[in-house]
Length: 262
Image 1 (cartoon, rainbow, N blue to C red):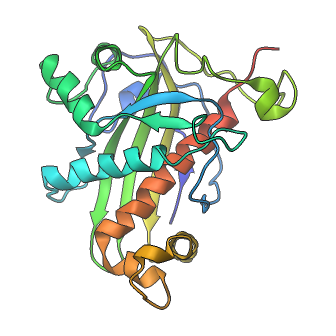
Image 2 (image 1 turned 90 degrees about the vertical axis):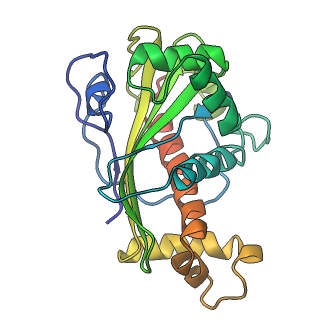
């Protein structure tokens, strides 16, 4: 099953738990219906921003090498750098710094992981970037049919993340009556958007999305017919699809939750 939804909301906290449930309680978003899979590789971001991606933590119950964990973050960085602005401009989307810069900032701060909002803000300001993507891997199955699941959270610098938001450009007007206000400042960072992603290739909808993704990346499918077989058989390639879904899901959630000033 594939699910992209928000964490349940409660009261603001200061500690990031192993699966980010604590920090997610600071969000005001309610449980949302299951959304459709995003299947377009290039995604239009609602505003321009420079982001960093921290290494994901592993709560999958299986051993994952540090190299593989870093590979997930690297692929998300690559997918972020493929986004465009709302007008199709390549320099108007979400861009990402290399994971090495995030790791360097964490080492400079003496951090082996990011566990608190204060640590997240410190990393954001040390790099510096507008926002930081954190995640916890909750399922890792590299065998055909592959599966991957994760809890993902985008934290933003409260002064910078949405500074490039253009309501008129995105909505064609100065206000969006369907949006919801989510900018709760908590110690200098905004828990901007969260995502629970479950991508099990047993699910028909997931396989359909993999096929669409594979068809748009025919240069790397190795001549497989159907083309998605390459992504289902080679987990490293499946993680390319996963990274695309992470970025697509975060952007979709962000576009649904931001509300321009009226």
